[in-house]
Image 1 (tube, one colour):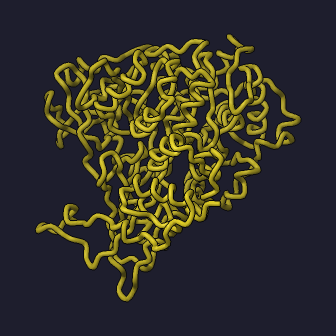
Image 2 (image 1 turned 180 degrees about the horizontal axis):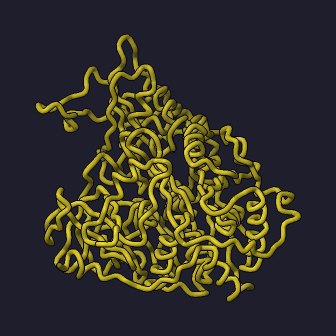
Length: 604
């Protein structure tokens, strides 16, 4: 009984309100307090309220209301925060559109969600595909010039959608998850009850708005009277910048996926971030050795491991990491008004210590997937432990209960993976690659040839009479998939190896030969020699040519993060242009962006 009821006694009375009502209540309590800082701009709660109200009135006039979607294609900025608040004030659900996504993927999202309005800026409007929705540029003051600064007073039910978040889909098409105000309000109020932000807290917002962690980063401080510190676009990829920002802006609360937390701790200045009060981890497995490192660099700062799928209002379980933790770090127990069940293939509870699939029930569940009723019915199933017609979500995650009522993550039942905390359905990547006429068969797998560096590899059998251009196939994928879903390598095989049972033999798949892609031109200048040496060392290659493409040799944004502290220590500056993951540090003109990849050329 304890695995069904005892460890799921999580009932807490939560008010039936919406995100906009929570924010407006906080504005009334502290209109003059600082709500938001972003790259030198400081905005009070009262000023943020007026700006969001004016845009909300404009949206209402364009037909936005309950059950209507507004796409938000705005880079991280003050304008992005205003836009998100305006949408929920108008009664609509916001659909975040990352400006770095390929136009084809954005087109799929817009066609699927069918927004009535697309909010954008002068910088992002040019990258949007054709769609009949009205486009409003939020950085154009004329858009709201005649709109009042008072609240439009739109009333929506807590069960109405607050946002729509797209995740990778196994069929090759991303799927939109619809989350209600009730679900996300429960999640935010639990977080406040558990961690208690105060008026002197400062929360860093650095997660892309297209990922659900960003929801609590945006709204938790703004509904509790704390200050939201917004990182510059691309800043989330640069651990040195994050260290400097945490120190300069006196940040007290920050989120990291574990892989990025490791890079943050590698920075020489990480120990100066002692003003942090709490660090939240989620998105991938948190290794015990990383917890030990964290507690050594930042003693006394709380580290909290959270878990949850997009389909359940961001997070459903939590665990505070005690001093001296080692081995597997648990994902903890359920949050308020959420129940967690570990079941076998017949939906029967398994005892502590036995691995089963995790199912989630409670108010945090999403309403389902946009326009995909069959998939919604497949993943959101009837809960056998409730007589009220309650649903539960089948996560696909394998877990086990410990004897003390704490959950431990074990693995997956399917081909879904996470890299750098980002959810990827391998089937979606395979479906995109199969769309290239040169591809006959394809299998995409995750490799980890170096500890801690997980990356995608596509193994391809060419179509009859065709050859596979590895670089061209990656470019093909980059025009259709977000950067994190593009395979780091393409390996052409005569046939895909199979086991005796006819399944893909993953152990027989060869590692990519990145060394074979190295060009012959040797470095000509001291700066080239230094950079090529750094790249070779980090990519675990004997040598790197001066004309080689960093990404074609297995590099990615995480590897750039690994390089960042080394550059800093050796006083090497690199110009990293917008959209490539970081910002200028000055010194060596060795890079520029070519499409979505970095090419390392001559140093002057």
